[in-house]
Length: 115
Figure 1 (cartoon, rainbow, N blue to C red):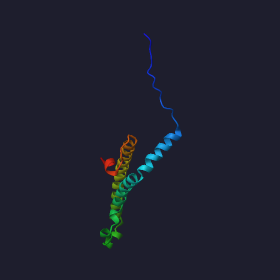
Figure 2 (cartoon, rainbow, N blue to C red):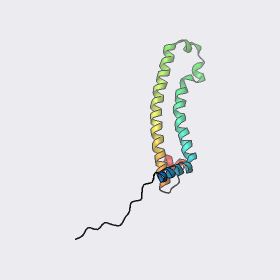
Figure 3 (cartoon, rainbow, N blue to C red):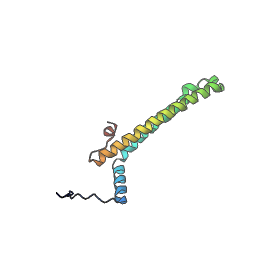
Figure 4 (tube, helix red, strand yellow):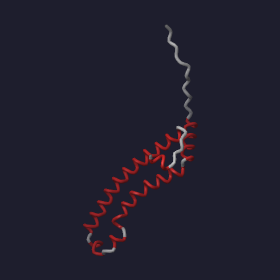
């Protein structure tokens, strides 16, 4: 018996083809990807601003009590870091999924990416 390989030829790797394909996917889905990035970037910023909202600043006695203010800021920063880590991980996963959908020939809209 003789061993025969099937006549499949692997496509040649060209870096410019990869870069061109990457930017074409990005620019075809610029609006959905950009809006998703804004959505997942604003959430940690809003959480960080909570201690400084007008309701918290209406009481001048809290501005002189630095220990209470420091505790609020520390809690806000800690929660912001956790929310930021979760949001960036989710955003990365959503954008990768949207890119794969686009490369498979589908349409990567906002709702499709969030699915």
